[in-house]
Amino acid sequence: MNASNPNPPRILIFESDSKSRSVVRKLVVNGFPGASVQASNMTLEAAAGDTERLKSFDVLLVGCDLSSDGSVENPTFRALRALTADPENPAVILLPEGGSEYTAVQAIKAGASEYVPRRIMDRDQIATAIRRALSRVCETQAISDDAVASETSTQPFFGYDITRQLAHHENVSVYLAQSAERNAEVVLKVLHRGQGAISRDRNFERFVNEFKMLHDIADRAVTEIYDFKVTQSYCYIAMEYFPLGHLGQLLARAVTTEKALSTAIEIAHALSIIHGAGVTHCDLKPSNIMLRDSGAVALIDFGISRATSLDIPDTISEAIRGTPYYMSPEQARGRAADSASDLYALGIILFQMLSGSKPFVGDTPHEILDQHCTAPIPKLPDRLGHYQPLIDRLLAKEPELRLSSARRTIEELEDALANKPKLDAAIAN
Image 1 (spheres, one colour):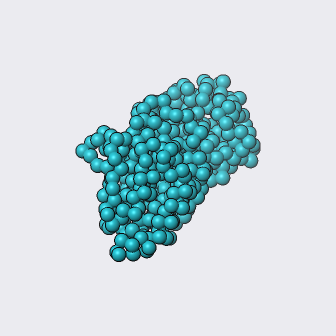
Image 2 (cartoon, one colour):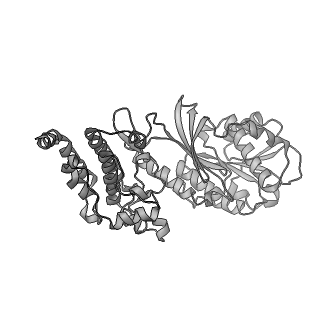
Image 3 (cartoon, rainbow, N blue to C red):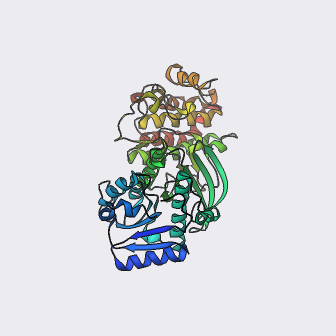
């Protein structure tokens, strides 16, 4: 694209099917009036060699079929990687038939500017994708193009009306938003592009990992996923909103013993679901445990979770992720976490719910982590002493000495809850 060219954008459509080609052309013309639009029945891989012609366009819209092959070796992805390796080539918007969220990730990694599945393709989606593609070209090449000015008036996240920001850290933001499709409030977790391509952002793999794990588990024990989108500027996960908030807010006031035990049972049930799916949470803490109306809980924030089939982290810094107050001794030492690490975190949370305070505190994260590794297991108040054996088994320093599974933990907690009246009577006497 010529940076000094003030003319309307030049758009080339690649689509082998004549009917689909006509549909795409009509959507472009109606959604982006004034654009210079050409169409070809060639595939991207066939046309990729004619770079001189391609460079005379600003945006390429490429139809492709990903229904049978969405792998990185798909011919369209190979041609896309070769084309986008040269920054002088035009932006590419993929219009796939079939495919999935995973192929969307592969497309963006290969260099696609936008990914608009045929099943949701309409005039507004096409126009928005073109504006974003042009906006990025203007940003990287310092282009002044009046056709891009209208980008500022478009919705930043198509189909979602942002209500307020809930959290922000580095280039990740969490918003409360209204979903037009669902006519309900949802949470948008957004990874914004920093310097360079979003696919090379250090948080991108965590983001994709979180989506994949939640998508594969698909149980009420975890937050429900509604939508996942990846572009060159950002990617987001649209997920369930919990009006009751998280367990940390509940712990701001006194919790009865019955409530502590019943909540621990619900957390253990959620852990049994994710562990059964081969996933370790790695960062279980009150603010990652959301409350449902039914009294059940849902786990969120799987950004640093790991599947049991994944390799052990290469460095200690990769392994030490999580919140110090709830981190297991093995995590504090830089070892890989497993299901026993999640049960240790549950033990910390149970101690906090029963006693009203965290078992290990300190002025620095290092002090807290050192206590997890070396300090004796703290004692509950005398009135709760009959629950100490359960705490001891959950907070054992060595993973193999802890309760063997989340299912076994549920059994122990249910027995404790069922026997509470007898134990209370014994203490009273």
